[in-house]
Image 1: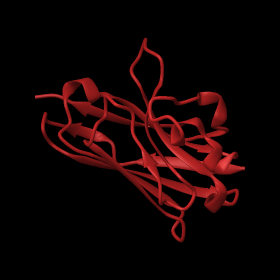
Image 2 (image 1 turned 180 degrees about the horizontal axis):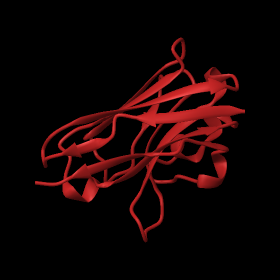
Image 3 (image 1 turned 90 degrees about the vertical axis):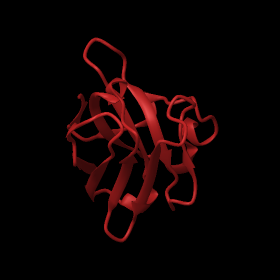
Length: 132
């Protein structure tokens, strides 16, 4: 079992940055593929980043571009998502998700393909609101 808890959400103005953290415990974190998803009420959850088990590979969907940066520290069992140049359209609940299939997750092969079914462990989410 992998227990995940997100933190760092909040209210920011357009153009500002925010850093989200995901703290893990339980299951061998080093072998877990990690992704960040976000969800707006009434819409499907969408993937915004994923990272390999050793942190050497990262992937972002096209709509994210270079605005988000994901990293992980296996010694500390944490994953960080840096959100830059935030816009109102980024307002959502952001979730950290862990996969037991490690580096076999689809997002590491196809930057625009995120399969929720590959992620077995989910945090409760943290709200990010971007508003002037």
